[in-house]
Length: 358
Image (cartoon, rainbow, N blue to C red):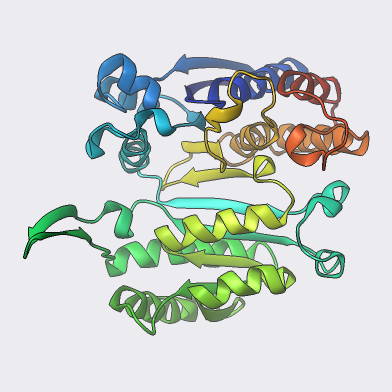
């Protein structure tokens, strides 16, 4: 198989973790007889510094011309003072919209080797943490109107949340289909006691449930869901929710698994081309120090193989290698719990050494 992957190294630790993921992809390609080529794409703060734009049109086109996109991380305090429409995060939002990737899927699964790293009580962890958050990605308040006006001598900030029925229906369908392939339980999360958007969300989800009689649908308010994720995460199988709620809940869910550095994500639309990235940020405080955890990015590459390239054996190969390295006691600083740890490059090397065909 030959595939072209657009690579966005981004800012902060982005280049370090992406380099390790590419090295793993190359090792998998050699093991299974594939050819992966890479097209570099500037996005985020690095693109702003170079082009004065966090995502020039030419760079977006490179992504659209690729078979899939691998992203490290963007942003950092260096760009806090740039105009709002030039911030690194705006490039990411434009990339998601330009690619039409409306479904962000973030697994929250604890590796048994890291059970002690979870901040939750052991009896809660032992019940199991294995669920997926399906987050609507290109609608809601992040893509609404944003402006600041002067009124009666003071500034007033305005951010508008909107959703159409069709936007809710298409992400709801992803939620139901995902649940159908797992434990057949779907929790729809909203704030219908306050927001009209959420009342429409709830109505559409219940209408859509008629097409999925084999999936158990439940509703939960977002504030309650935030509490339940830390109280009893084992109750969840698949959570589907809107953009901002999904952003917050998925970060919370990642931390109960032991480290935000371990969690991959996929963003998909109607085709097979996707955007794959770890859910953590650019961590500029440790950039260039060989301290970053590359596992979330490496597992994101595995998700790319599985969901965009239809290569499940190759994806399994990477996941087995990660598990073997963790079994051997290898830890980066974020998961070492104060004990001995290795660096980003060494973690990548050890994962490559453990790649074997199943």
